[in-house]
Picture 1 (cartoon, rainbow, N blue to C red):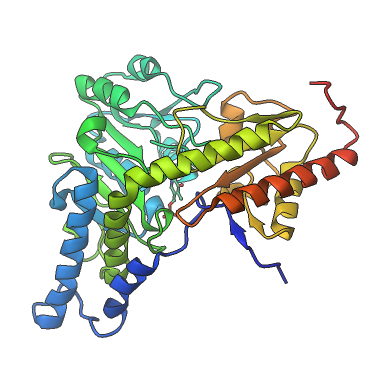
Picture 2 (picture 1 turned 30 degrees about the vertical axis):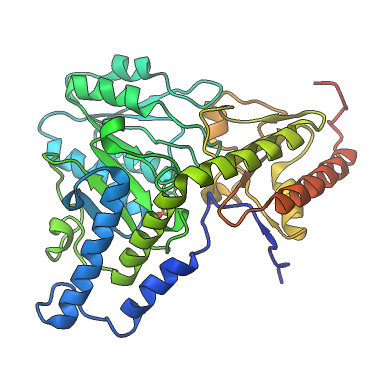
Length: 391
Ligand SMILES: *Cc1c(COP(=O)(O)O)cnc(C)c1O
């Protein structure tokens, strides 16, 4: 039996559903059960719920409602963007550009295309996890059809200079997709400012429900379906809509947008308090960009410590934290993100991610610092390779 998690600091993995979103969803799980494709009253109630949510998401993105397609999550949105463009534009060329620090929903999709004969350029990042926009410009060829660069990194929190990259892709006539799962409803994600053509988001990363996401598709972008069936979502995401999930996502997005400014300020202060306390300990350091960083992300390495052991002990003290990304937890391979940043031992394995959310308090941060300090000390005593001050 696992001990209860009393301090949840893993919001990059998922967030609790907020009460208001649940309340908005409940009627669609009970009395409003109609299929949105049906023309009678009940069907239309569902359709109106979906339409309202589409407007709420569009409002946050600064786009038109009809440019938002609902999907089953961030992963499906990434797959639809990349495979949909690849299939739609294969006649124009078969070259794609992405980066080494993408989520596996993007990286593995690109790898699947590579097996089908596509040429994939994987751009490097600097030590802070940032992509130099010039490398995007240099990588674009006559046969390039898509650039896919994430907005905010889920492991180290680094935010990419997307507007600069967007200016380059637009000038070259190449489409730009961004995985904005960690940034949508957290920091501004205006699609015009960033000049992106496709953008993925996911409900459960901003206190909405799991199993629902969306893809923004700019007008004129030709996507070919990757699944076949009914006409839902312009035929690009066939299947009876997850009405309650979509309504919950819309509600959570609208609420987060209203609170965004104050939440950015509050979380940034908590984040910096946590970073300052952890990096004040001997032989520890921050991973990721110091300022171009998600307001809720802390990623710190401690020399002489195994991240997995540290993470397990944090869990035993009731703290929910993560090593690398949730998807790779349990696998012994080092994080592909930290590796791409050129991070080496002793920093590579001793890494811990703490990600904050709207329920995180100063008291929780203080308690977390206390436990982290004790656990690192304890683990270092039994670490044969650790010599204090030798780094
Ligand atoms: C969580 C996450 C995803 C996957 O979203 P799901 O809705 O869980 O499929 C994709 N990209 C990033 C950056 C994420 O953090």
